[in-house]
Each structure stands twice: as C-alpha cells, then as structure tokens.
Length: 298
Image 1 (cartoon, rainbow, N blue to C red):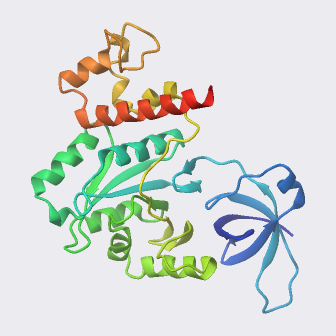
Image 2 (cartoon, helix red, strand yellow; image 1 turned 180 degrees about the horizontal axis):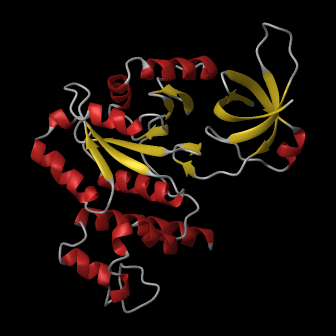
Image 3 (spheres, rainbow, N blue to C red; image 1 turned 120 degrees about the vertical axis):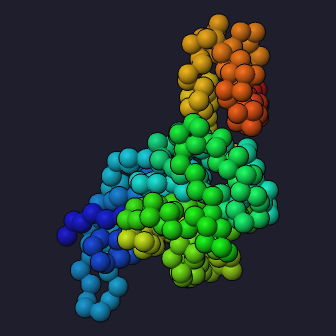
C-alpha cells in the first residue's frame, strides 16, 4: 500500500518515517540509489508499506522524495516551519560571525528563523538588549532567554506552539537546558533517540524529529564553526537584508560592497545605519568565499 509520511531520523541506511500514529522503518528503492538521491530529516516521502505480521514493527520501502519547501545544510533538515538559531550571550561569548553565517544559510535555504540568545542572566539587561536591537532593527524576531531564571521562556514556548521546528547552534550555548526549560524531558528524549540509533555517548549526534509542544522539534548536534559551502561570493549580499535599501547608491552593479570607491552600503555603515558587527561578518564571509572560489579555479 502506497503511503506518504515525514522522515523523523535516519541511521545506517534506514529511515524512520512517521505516517499518522505509526513510525515505519524504511529503506530506499534501488532506482533512487542509482539516481544519487538526497534525503534528510523532515523530508516528505512516498513509500510502499510492507505487509507484516501483527505485533511486528511497521516497515516500508521509500520510492520517492516529495518536493521540498525549504532546505537547510547546517543542520541538514527540510520542510521546517521555523529555524530556532540558538547562541549564548556569555559562557561562551557571543560570536556575531557564527550567528550571521547561520542567518545567511537560513535565508539561502528559504527557512524562516528566530534568534534565541541564551544565558541572558549572565549579562546585564542593557547588554542583551543591545545585541537584540541589532537584529530586531532588520526584521528578525529575537528572544533573550535564561533557562535558569525562566526569562523569556514562556514567550518562546508560545511562539513555537504547534510548529515543526529545528533548533541549532554552536556547542556549549545551553541548547539542552533551553529545550528542557521549554518542555521538561525534551533534551533527554532527543538524547535517548540519538544514543539508540547512533550508539554514541553525546547528547545529540544526529538530527532527530521528536514530538514537541504540539508539533515536532528537530534537535541537532552542536558545532564549532560554520562553512558556507558551494556559495558564490556574488550571492552573499542578497542574504544581508539591510543592504537592499542602500544598493541603489552604489556606482557599480554588481557591487561587492568591499573595495569599490562609491558604495551606498559602505556609506550606510559609516553613518551608523548598518551595524558594524554585521558588516564585519559580511567582510569575513566575502573573503572566505573569494578564497574558496580561487581554489576552485586553480
């Protein structure tokens, strides 16, 4: 019988697909392997459900991956309602560069996102608001939160109600504590799933969808750095949404907003209309992408 479902997790060639209240353990048909298929957590698939004796685990064979409405490479997920980009204000200190890279990847993957600033109790309210203001000014929702004091937790929980959400961010930012503050036991649940299928010791080694707050949550492994793979330098300005208002003042089209003598974006930075931290992130990303581009043509 042909069914449709959502991939909750994958491991060692098996895909665990939710269809209604049943989770099917699936493999993929041979023709998909020949076509070098792409399949990840959150994908919607069409599969053939196997006839199994009563009491045995449901099984199936995936025949088709349905079109994605969005896709993220860090972490690797598809068809999410919201990407919760999580980073800390202290311990470890906030990295504007990593945060801005994650925002670029979300924009490139057509993934709506909110920013969660954890450990707000470790900095002054003014310091937290200063960071939040940079991103709120360009249209992002920002939630300074503290898992220890409960600050901001209720507002974030309400925002995530009923959605299919991915939570991702650097290692050590308190994501597990945040998830348990939002819904006690969630981090333990995702950790248990990861250990069961991955045989690992770390809390989160794989990206797994679990029931969460009336919807689903894809918890994901932490990381130390973010790479903008397979992106051309010319793409980058499109993912800095605040640049658009000033690009018509650039003399050259296209303009890299780095070395050109007359540049509306650089003028806006100098006038305080674009945050210097954002422009510094942009410059670093541009140089990284240019270096990668040059390697490809050597």
